[in-house]
Image (cartoon, rainbow, N blue to C red):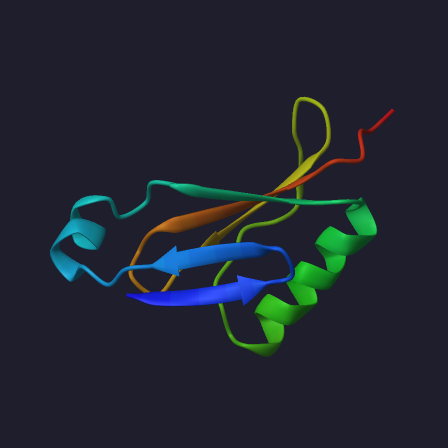
Length: 84
């Protein structure tokens, strides 16, 4: 387990390979970013690190990006900014 302080937010991460394998492809974590431009920054960071991800898509209210974590779980990034 690891605790990561991110500003006022603390995140606990747990390593459990059998559970991660059972949940592969599922998205237990979704993170909000303020704007579409911020989502483009996330894509650039993922690309720099060689992390597989899908395209930015137009979701119900804003934009959405899905990325696969090394353990097979999926992380989704949503924008708080809404489209047209």
